[in-house]
Image (cartoon, rainbow, N blue to C red; front, top):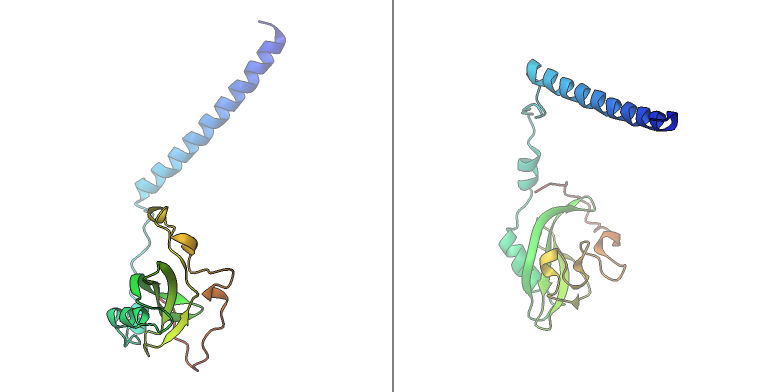
Length: 168
């Protein structure tokens, strides 16, 4: 074995030993956590204000009624709701629906969960079945964005009250 070959093998041996040391240290730390009873689950905390209950106490319009309002939007002929959720949008709690019309045009309709009023209806865009199972339906990939003028860029309604956000 020549000296050049020996030097190359020493470098490789040093790398292998370094990896082994890191692996051993990691296993030791994991064992120490288990041995002391520490876990990765967060502690159970019960505060005095339940945000979900607080938010839901402000929702006076049912999901079904809001969906019916979205489907009956005067800007959409023969609308049928194909999806929706209660979500936080621009600092407000809203119902967000996808509505399809008889011409396979898809619209985003935002309904206020307290008043039942339609806050926003997007322009329609063509619905394409190809790729729908992969989270795409025409231009719906990435959320409610339409021609660069998505609802996220629209002015928030100025009703004087702003419902809080939720993760529901």
